[in-house]
Amino acid sequence: GLGEDGPTHQPIEHLWTARMIPGVTLHRPADGLETAAAWADAATRRDGPTLIITSRQKMPELSRPAGFKTSDLLRGGYVVVDGRDAAGAGPDVVLVATGSEVGVALDAAKRLGEKGTRCRVVSMPSVELFDRQDAAWKASVIPPGSKRVAIEAGRPDGWWRFVGECGLVLGIESFGMSAPAEQIFDHFGLTGAKAAERIAQHFGLAW
Image (cartoon, rainbow, N blue to C red; front, top):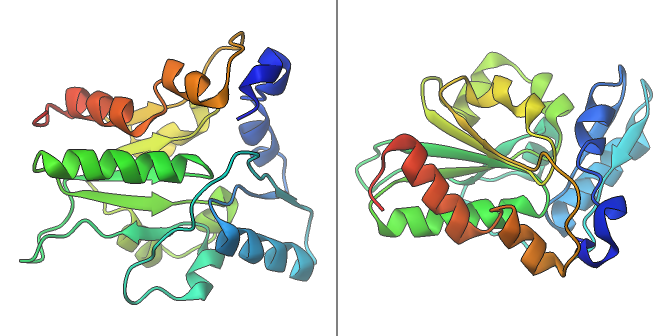
């Protein structure tokens, strides 16, 4: 989001570097409510340090589905858009994102939905907290066997265990661009329009 400052302000490796440190819990919140939950987690932890990675650009407050509980925020990953149809059929694709890219995932899901693809959007502000949940919660958020996509403005490496070898990770693997944030995100394909097109092409969906 600090594209004008060039590659020195494109810390694409920092998120997974921090996530790999034993004992560290990292939060990358997508809105004010997730930020408050991250702070609450940091203030009450007694078993290790907490990192809160916020974005500099403006981001909208998320709308959450019926049945959402604020305690879900401390499970590390939760459903923002369910993606089921009126008959109860599950989502065709699950989009997992963090921070500012949750908005990208929501936009991509809307665009794919207009083409007939049901999309679930999952916000995962803390991989570490999600890893500590039981199997039932994980499966309720990311259904086993589903088509999966991860979206994060950083190195994609750590996301493959969530999406599987047939999944898709939209991330960044290089430095060097210097431009306003909107142009940077467009260049790296991290916009709703470009993400939707990549997802459709990858899974052979209508587009």
